[in-house]
Image 1 (cartoon, helix red, strand yellow):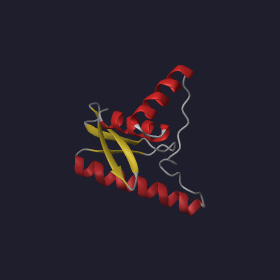
Image 2 (cartoon, one colour):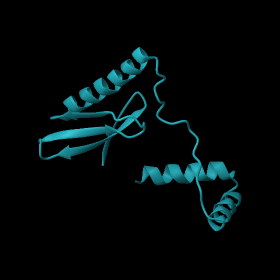
Image 3 (cartoon, helix red, strand yellow):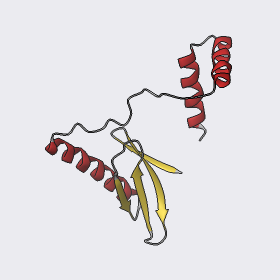
Image 4 (cartoon, one colour):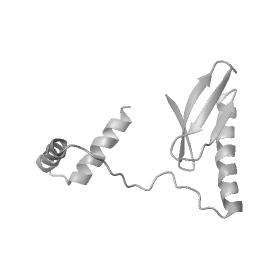
Length: 111
């Protein structure tokens, strides 16, 4: 999977063979921000234009644009998994939060 970033907004890039173009969709906001381009240069330009246009519409309407993410994540798990990761964090000398952040970062880097 290819991705692009502009002003903290992350887009997933795909290819649409039916129209012979690349297609992008911003994945870290709930508002639909999409764009197309025949070349990667055109795709990057359209991505920036789409994000900037969305931010401008928010400004004009007096709407606070969504931030890509707050930095907070609530995760539900079984007590057994909670115990396992708390033990792993303690053994590694890390707080539970630091251990989870490190594990998620490592997993995302290899996704």
